Image (tube, one colour):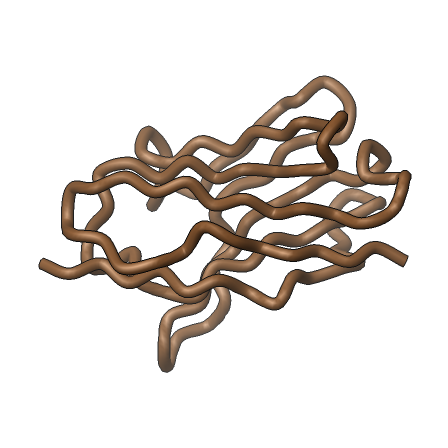
Length: 118
């Protein structure tokens, strides 16, 4: 069992940066690929970025490529999402997720709210 706890959300202005963190419980963090998603009111949950468990390979949605960076620190059981040049359209609840097999999500965090004012 893995528990994920996000933090770092808040209210920022357009153009600002924010770094989200997601801490995982358990000793198997390095066995999981990690990802970030978001969900805005009235919209479906949207994939943002993923990072592999081994070589740190990353993949991004076109909507955030070049602005957001995912990284992980296996020694701290933590995955990060650095968000730059935030726009009002980025406002949402942000979730981290863990998956053991490709394309399958096994665990979700509870989410952290990001609000961007114009």
